[in-house]
Length: 334
Image (cartoon, rainbow, N blue to C red; front, side, top):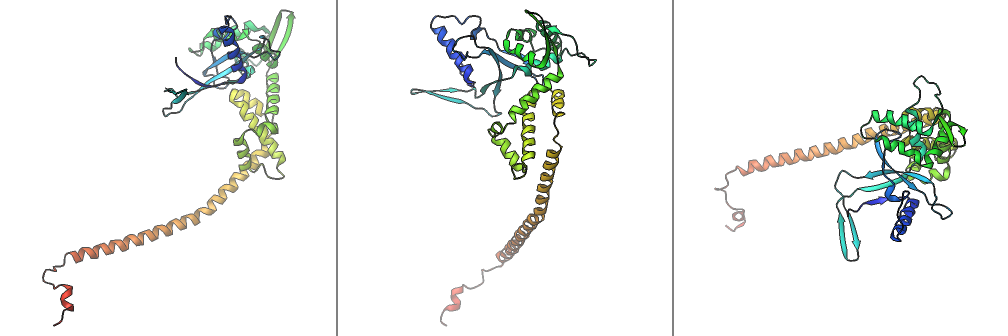
């Protein structure tokens, strides 16, 4: 059996463990079990490239089996050079020649819903019409698969069976209750931007940003951690949060989100810092060049001296010394 190394969320591991225990106890995995949860091939929210996603049941906080659905993004991390995994079980060591790392991370279902809704957005700029969820996904799926031969239409349509998708529609759409059983939706760009702004606000909180050492180092490099730069630091956090969210947004949606913020003062400050760093680097360049030139001149003189000595030695080698007396004869008594 092939072994795969993966990084999974705790709640997904809990689901796997619970379902495995139920199966061992004679209970079937059933229609809601792991055996019936397929990997879905869907367009990536930012690039539209076919990507893998895995729906899963989240554990019920009350301890029951009725937890809601979540969706994981499935990624395979590999390096250009071959890698292997080594496992030790007792005294037996096994090797997995496939050194890829499988990473599953939760994704906000709203990111998946936005491009699906945009696929049926009227080209004339009008708001469009209200439609039931099934009609929306049927129409969107037929249009999306026309531009891709690797995205199954049934994978897109199957999203309608998960409650997290229904919740996502309510966040980014205007909706109306026609009857207790029928709800209709219409894509709303205003609600999308409002939802994304709320997400940016959460991600830009001090305690969230501090978890990333890379972001903190960049702030320090740009001088945002200095005293008196609190306003710029706040803008820096917001911009970093926008950049993070942009990983799951189409360029047009990201541009609309950025238009809600004014980063002019931050960009001016960063340009000034970079210009100052460049000036310092250029000022130090002549000194470094002079030292390099001096070292090169010294090396040239040594090479010339060595070259002259070498020619002198070659000349002496050509002298006929066969008729010359030995040095010891000059020190003998006469």
